[in-house]
Image (cartoon, rainbow, N blue to C red; front, side):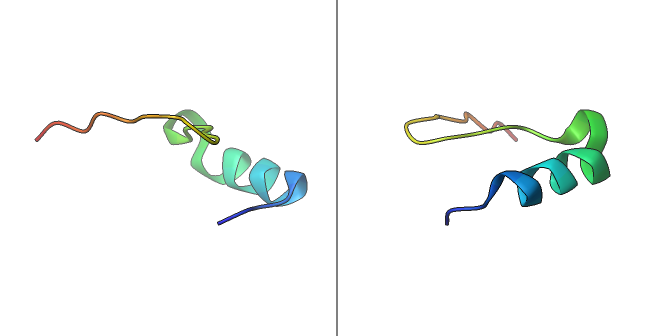
Length: 32
């Protein structure tokens, strides 16, 4: 879902190094 810039900033602050900025077309490969 779409999130505003301020909400993204808050998530980035809270998650720190674990925050992953993604966008349309971004592909994440998750391995077990």
